[in-house]
Length: 336
Image (tube, rainbow, N blue to C red):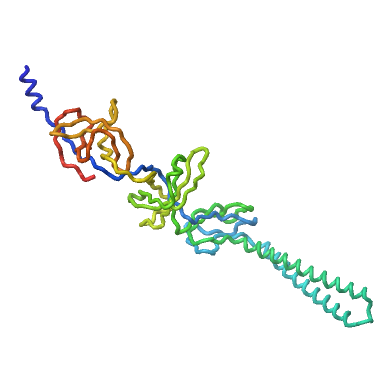
């Protein structure tokens, strides 16, 4: 029986594992967050005067800066414009007559009394005031008419029609929303405890549309939200190629400190067991269990503190079923 047991041990196949060497790497603490691509130029076009909506551009319409996006019905105001134009003309005629009469009386000399001249002067001044009031009312109406058209504050595209033609728009009602074509930004929200770790100009790794790129921190809003305990970070995304679509979700990794040279292993080398975090080191074709304490993580690598040295081969595949002093067979590992 003893010989059969020894023969069984000798015939036990070695576990196949993949290994990579532990390395000294420049690692910096970072945080992974999700965000969204937004346009720097977005606008909600709201009514500053009330009226019925006569026309509005379709969703997807490309507009240039200053181009009309929507228009209120101006039929009633057009009638008022004609009336005010007639009032201004009437006031101009009245002023002209009053001025002519005042000049005639002034040239009469002693033929008229001072009281008559003062009365005509007052009549002329009142006619001038009436003309000024009529012109001011006319200008007010023209200004109101100009606000009956909703013009694009920048070049972009109509992304939403909040109201339709024929609907009534009160003062302050949003009738359409416009999105810009440029000035792309990525908006992220980070835990408030990191507000002093992020700095404008820091380069951030960004994963968007299946590609990995980088973008600098454009601005920080160091005001925390009371409920979420988070603050906003804005990245400049206008140099990302290809330019991501507005509304696209992104994944970003933000640095939280200066890089440090630390002993690191791939994340896949860490094995969590009841006795703690371990890695398996390969020596003489046998697995040695080494207890480690994880530290700073940077991408696929993580710093560890334990009885490891640079160059030690650590298992990254096949370590889940290993035990201390198990025999192993090393297979080729892909580059890390």
